[in-house]
Length: 497
Length: 103
Image (cartoon, rainbow over all chains, first blue to last red; front, side):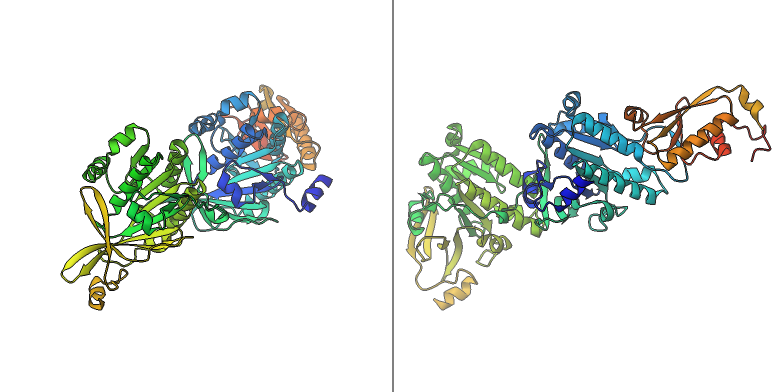
């Protein structure tokens, strides 16, 4: 009784890390110790994975044993189902780091007459917790417990409350999963959260533009701050749930003043001496204006300077890329066999956005490039729900900058002549530099123009320069006479000239 | 009374209780009555606070529970076991056509 009072008064809550890094950030370091958290979600939203990961992290990293109370799957099934995430549940059971309370449905007839309590369940949980010296308890899922005692909702509710209180008194951190009927409706089927939970977390697996979008959201944290809103998550083999961190949390990248080449000396001059080492540059232009060429130069220039370059391409196949590069006098094949270049070509539709982000992060961890090109963001935007795309861009750009890698992304304008694409609107505030490639009409000729629109923290050439493309690449020429309107209608621009 | 119908039966039931609670006391009282009424029925009492491993083994969630582990599948009566007729009927020891005058 006194211990319960102490934990209630204590204003600074000790945190229990879940092992899902970005999620722990959302809740200021982890779930509050000694409290009860409900994790709600529809079938297939990842509740059991989340719960198991919570235990796994305690067992494998922090030496905090756990108890898994299962009302649904048998312990043997859980062992098998969770093995793909790299969790060796059998070994944990053998070493007494994890103890199961098997409350999964058994074959028996049951009749209920009058009043009863769930002392049996509570006793078993406490017994298991003592056996394992457990710090973390999972009940998965309590919806099944309600189903086990159909018609006795009030009793189960009262008893669950009693169980939660008893476990809290033992200082145990409790995670209960609960089933939801719909992604955006009441929190759980039996409104358990209202009486039993200090904290409520929602896992979603919603259909958005014909794609699955998995997210996690912290709905309530009693006596503690948390970050609001849905955060994308993905299920990864050998890891479990990975939340895609929102960089808005930490915008403290240091800015380097070191310059690297864009791969084109004339363009370097326009930029005031090249791109910054830890910056992201956006190249925006209509199809055929030379974005792929700039990407090719960027990669080749890096490799020539002794750097490692990574290309993630969503537009073209390897074959096409090799052919294009050869056309401009660049040999990607030799760079790859030297191990200086890595090219990954993948259809945007092959996976959803958080998985793309994760893939890029893994590639960077593995290959450790000095520069990375992504061609194009517009292709990725096709598969993304609007909110998801902005989150993706924030995470991607901040990741690139944090790793002190020079980044180059392309965006394709929808119209051939100027105008703004949606991705441009999104990304223009997130990138450090913007280079525009435009078709510009002069009397009866259509020319290509390049301009550096923005160069964070540096002077740059503000002219719109002509350029031509031939068998040796890109050649910058004289500035345009007059002032063509690169943002609008080229006809209007020429009439003004 | 239906003593005759039950005299040939030998059965062991288990009564799971959790410590000394009003519900447990009522259940223990009913246990005595049942044994008195149906001589062939033996009822073991298991206090799960003393033997939590027994609750785990049998998969007991609720108390009080009167359980027949020898039946396939096992039969469980949860809650109030003071109605002897109901108890015997549920576990299959009370022949309705044989007995007549009980309660």
